[in-house]
Image (cartoon, rainbow, N blue to C red; front, side):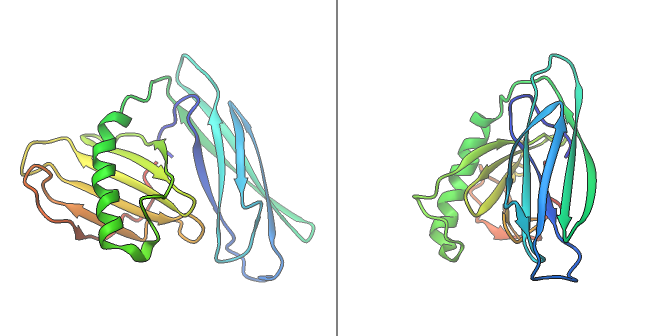
Length: 200
């Protein structure tokens, strides 16, 4: 995770890689310094499923690093991993810019990909995502999907936008991605290879 900001949720993905006891779930717990644990869902994992440990960084006026410890327990055996979360004291000023791209993509998914189960009634929560150079990102979460919208801050014909979709409970990285090569040029969306990791 590249960057988080105070007061905005950030989520780590958790999977079980040991298939030795598929019928015996792994219990997930977490603690943090410099952040508050907002939720762990689901609290018990089996191989083939993906969990989320979500934290909210504490208020800060200087750059800081939160530390998150994620613990897995099964049949009396416990393992822990530690993750660092860079926190920058900045305001989220990108949502207004991101919204038109998301609305365009959501309408297209509803019309062209009903198999995804995304409808006009799907409820979405916006989530801050750090920017990578001239490519901006923002995410929206539903009960089933983490959707990341990317857009290239350039003039036509280089003003592309992409959408990356991760199914929250089965995918550790996006499994679907689509691209519009030029927004102002009105080019049609087309499928592209999804990124290998979630942009956070």
